[in-house]
Image 1 (cartoon, helix red, strand yellow):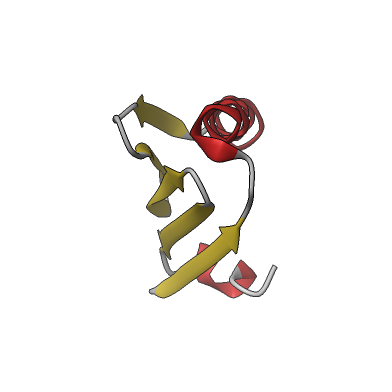
Image 2 (cartoon, rainbow, N blue to C red):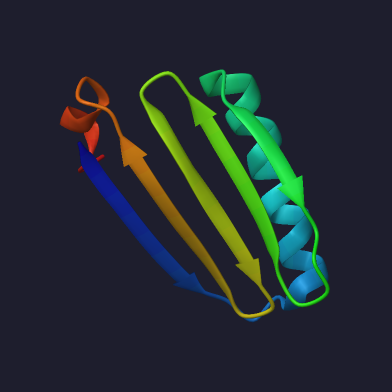
Length: 81
């Protein structure tokens, strides 16, 4: 299994970052047939996503996005992309 960890800082604040993350979740569902759940918190949000061969989370904070995913064997060949 391959693991992916991506962290990107931003200066958007939580409200604007939340909008972008929600749009990302909608696109992931539509384009990649992901099943996404969005949990809003007072200081951060958590998007959980999964489908056959991949599962992970996107943590949304006022100053960063952090994506962690675990790819199954067949999708692991696409890790670098």
